[in-house]
Image (cartoon, rainbow, N blue to C red; front, side, top):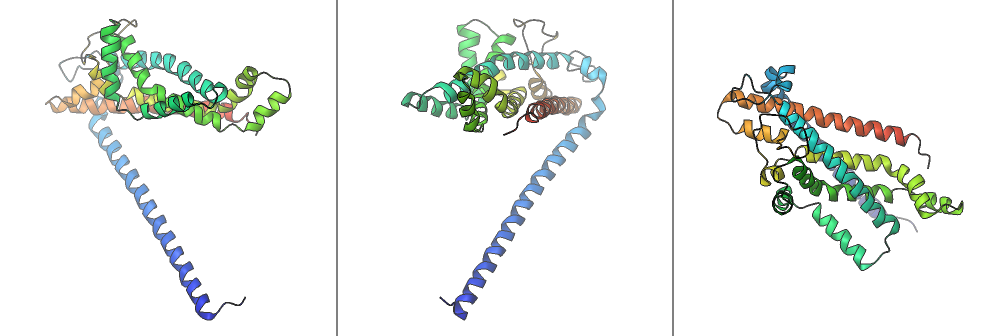
Length: 296
C-alpha cells in the first residue's frame, strides 16, 4: 500500500519531534548529573579547605580534649573500628544465610512472601527507629548499657535488611543453567549452592555488604538514640567498653560555638571519607578477584 505525501510528511514531523524530545531529555539528564557533581565537589572542597590545617598524624593519634589545638580523634576512630568490625561479624553471616535460605531453599508460599515484604519495608525504616529499638532491647532489657556490643547489635539491625536484599539480588543474577548443570553432574543442593552459586554471586554480595557497612559507619542517629556518649577519654579495649564513634565526634564538634572545633569537625569528615573510600576500594578488589574467574 502506497503512502500519500500528507502521511509521509506527518510521519517525518513525528520522527523529528521524537528526536527533539529525546535530545531535550538527554540534555536535562546531563544537566542534572553535572549539577550533582558540582555540588558534591563544592562540598568536598569546602570541607577539605576548612579542615586540612588539622589533618596530621597528631590529630589522628591524640585523645579528645576541651582545647581544640590538642583535641584528636584516636578514641573515635578506634570506637568506629570496633563497631564496624562487630557489625560486619554479625550482619554478614546472618544476612547472607537468610538470603540463601529465602532464594535457594524456601518454597514459594505465603510465609515467604510475607517475610520478603517485611524485609523490604525494614530496609526503608529510619535509622533512629532502630536506635530506639536498640535502646529498649539491648541497652535496657539485656543490660548491655552503652557498651560497644550494644552499639554493634543496633547497627546490625540497621544494615541487616540491606545485606539480605543485596544478597538476594546477586543470587537471582546467577543463571539458572549453572544450577541445572551442577545438578546434572550429581551435586546436591548444598554443594551447588556452596561451590557454584555462592562464588558466582560473591562480587555482588560484597558490593552490597560494603555499601551497608559504609552506611553503618556514617550513622549517628541510632547511636545517639541508644545513649552513646560523645566524650570518652580512653580508647575502648573490649566489647564491654563504653564507646563513641566518628559520626558522634563530628556531631559534637560541629555543635560547639568555637570556630576551631568546626574546623576539627571538617577534618574528621575528611578522615571518615577516607575510611569509606578505603572500604569501597576493598569491595572493588574483591569484585575483581572473584569476577575474573566467572565465565558464564
